[in-house]
Image (cartoon, rainbow, N blue to C red; front, side, top):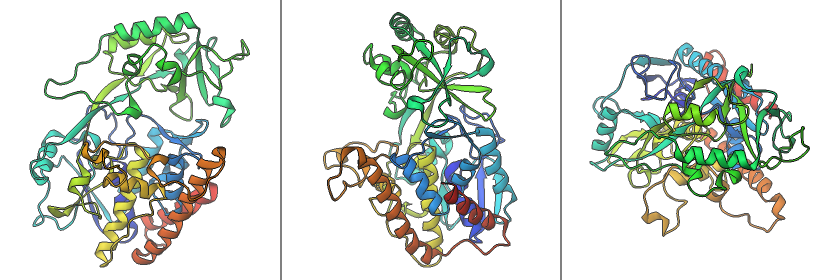
Length: 468
């Protein structure tokens, strides 16, 4: 295993729980990427949110699918969640610490600190998984390109939102509320803006100084995580229909929805730090402080982390990988996680879980069939292999994506619009469970209790399903 992120740790724990020895290579603590600040494994660098928790949302359904199928990391996420309305958010430090402890304590996992700069050959290792994520180092990227036949790698920029200290937020201006009262009803801090304040903010945003991209790279942003200034450049009202939409948020001081709202989500259980939701940015740090402190309630804001951008590296999976996510030209190599073109923490975990089953099945002389396309795991798998693309879209480059219902086939019968997403979610989980029963019969359950990793997986899976 190369890469100790979410996909890599999921695979390592799954294999270890089935008595398969794993050598997990992770370059920390010797080296970090520009976005990393911790030496822990499975570090969350962009957000502490695993996004929507409801079954009506595709990302909520795929989390439930992982719970039903014994996912390791989803158990840790459930165990370290923090209030976030209708989303599953976690205390990022506790989550990563728990995953790291599980990996380090497993008798079947040998953690190998240090940077891997060259993809091992078949003579050096009979089975290799590359799960180095969106910030794969230049040296390893060059080696991957060579293994892929010299094909140019694809890339885009992903932006990180700032974090502010809770005690530096003006609580005389902010009010606690979740949109339409979801969750506990007070999971977010909300900063209301009137029309004049909103207009001044948009102008300041567009006039700010921005960090340049490299001369040899074209800036291509992921639509689901656009820098706020890119959204603002698309029209003066764009932000009011995006991350600053006021719908469902009643200001208790006026009894009305504000003209626009900035939401802040707790980063930890103690609520001492808040992420400015949707405010990922490539502004220079000086401009960030000036522009963001112009917002109501943030005049004295203390920034615990400034927003930044980072490169996201991924391969052209549809043209390079076979149905078992192996490199066609070098079948001893598999790829997993964001480097395959899935986007997001949840999707990376899910991809890792699927790859772990493929490895176990292959070692037993079996082959994992494709997950049902009606499941969200199957939808993500089809995206990686380009199976969800239309004939016209297949001519374009492979583009990373979060999981969404548009990836799944339509329902067989017409249903009322308000029930449609719920039916999608119910079908996805049911079909995945049926499929998983047949796969489990092939690969077998984790080893009987007695091995720590196996016991952790079994107990965690049962507890998460029961809680859900």
